[in-house]
Image (cartoon, rainbow, N blue to C red):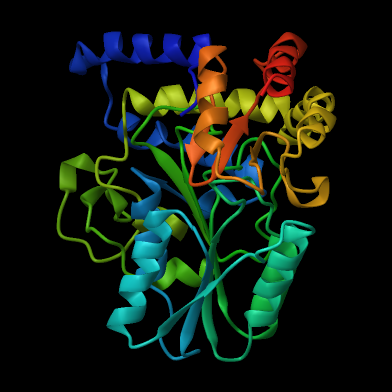
Length: 359
């Protein structure tokens, strides 16, 4: 979970104060409040805003996508070992319902060229019998970068669908949904979008424009903005609006996420990633000098990456050493996961280097 920027906090406080008196709200506010979210998120992922939906969680967004997958284009789905549970639970349930197999692609046991070989294994597994590939943009435990462009191309060449959970990198790592030929991209807002919990955004390609949403919210109908004549209406609003969560006009959360997205667009994920790359340069040789594993630069991100000792199971000791020095990391399986951002400094990295050197 990311910290709030001051401007995001201020937007939340102002929204709470405004919500104190609902008489100031206009009927149009229920709909216009989400327009900046779609605009800024579309800018970040290179999508038309009409393809963006407002969601409460990644699991919700994933379910909307998976529930509308074609069921006659293959006999198996593909994901990876250690994928985030929400992704696996969702696709496994779909496979069980439609009598399809879920193929899990594991990384190689050896650590040399691990990311490169893992990506190769994923690409080799996609064939004419593949119905869908569902994968995170990077691995949530160790930051292994998946080649989304190559995977998307392979999926399309075999008429397989491609669903990506972008929670771990969208906002801090550049992504283009069209270049990567992604059918659905799902993002929780509380990570690298720097927003509040329980509000996220999802991209759904035009293919999903005739799909069935998880819920039948009155707000997602084409004439919903006419409060004077709210009647039963079977026609949905344009694009991905049918997939908006109920009560999508989050009067407190939406202004907060709008502020964070606006700032991300101004900073630009390209520049954020480059800052992190330069920041961690002194750290890499220190990690390697202690015999610890870190993925090769070509197959890891600079904002989130894992380290471990390949020869012994001592990740808990490393994690505890970091804690003693007020270095806040995460223990994910055998991996100690390290993340950094624009708020981190050279002094922070220096403390981390010294702590690793003293292990």
